[in-house]
Amino acid sequence: METLHKIDSLLAKLTNSIPEVKPRFHLHPSRPLECSYRQLDTLITIITDEKPYCTLRCYNSALEHNITSSCLCRVTGDYYNMPFEYRRKQLNSESITQLCKSLILENTAFPDDGIETPTFSRFYLLIVQYVAQMQSHKLFKYLRTINPTVPKKYFHFRVADESEAITISGFEHNAITPFGMNKELPIVLADDITKLPGDYCWIGGGEIDVKLGFNVSEFIEKMKPMVTDIYKRDGEKEEETPINDN
Image (cartoon, rainbow, N blue to C red; front, side, top):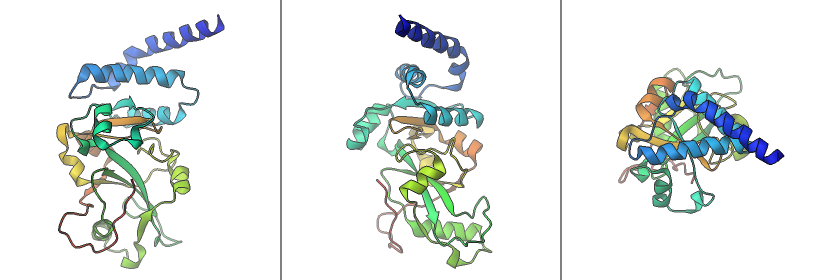
């Protein structure tokens, strides 16, 4: 009886919350009915999970930033062991190019007495596509251009240690998201993401098996990331070892 009472209580919470949640979770543009079901399923899972804190933190932060196009989708446990096409189908996205990830990069040359600014920092959050390969030299050139007074010697990048990335973000590997991080970081968005089908992409959603989708133009408008070309292109000279993180 206690279990049934608990279920009734949870369902009552869900029912009472639907009128408020619906305007905040817009439907995925390609197959709205299916996405609507997945949103409802995700909300039920969030309410009944024992420890949903990370996804709730991500969700609440997206709402606070007024990302009205956001959509949550819970994926299967084998998601990261499967090809990109399988992942695309799980998210009901139009193209594998819409599958993106958030990486925390460390500027190991940042001076000990350095003052962090919105464009010059020890750590940066990069949003890139899985299908692309990042070229650290392009990021270096871009940040040097927008920070002309900072000497060249104060830039050198590597992917942050996993333990450090977890501490900074508050999220596990493959769950990192720009929303609800322990520490806000300057965001760099690969410019190819601005050209995606439907102007829509998917990134981590606070938990390993939750993905967050959003409209890219709205993200740029609300979150103000730096947008630039940071990919290695076919035929380009490799000026520095590309940063890879699968």
